Length: 231
Image (tube, rainbow, N blue to C red; front, side, top):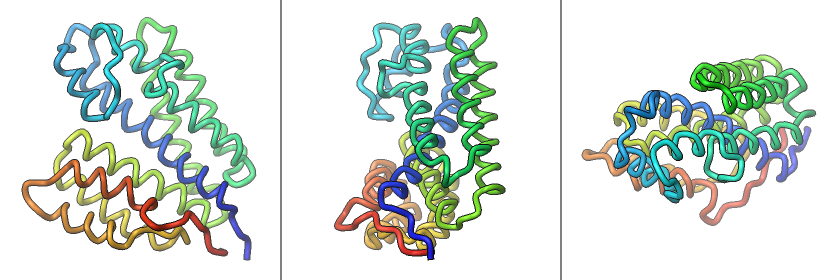
């Protein structure tokens, strides 16, 4: 049996989270802020609050530009993509060079967007390359444990963002159901209490979005260790 190191399992998990964060954030950002003229000050302030991002921006124009492309802003889409890239590079042997290449292409598209007069076109290419990354990961990664931990990170991040953005409860329930199908297959230890509570609160009305965020983010942090069993 091949054993995946604790360090690499953690990097896979966060590669899944960061790549999903970039994908879902760009899609949501494009829907809300496709034109600076349409952005109301209170809207981006509320957006920062929901995402727990410090509102360091001086105007709506400053927010749109820096939140997308400022590499010195740790909360920017750019910074999260670079974290995904850094993890992917370290994991080249686990995920394969071709899978890694799509994260590299996403970085290239992000850099093009940064200097473009029509950044949303290039941001869409970032999204397309993230989707291609996930497709290649499914097709090209041979080890089940690698694919499953990667997908688990993706699922955790998606639930977190959906809850923060107060999306329709049925969408969150769907993702929690998928999480249930993934979490027990990874070999990672997790809090069964948190998972049970997460499954409970998504069925209760009105939905407690803040509690969903807390439960999913603490799923692997309460009295558990990130240990991967042999596969």
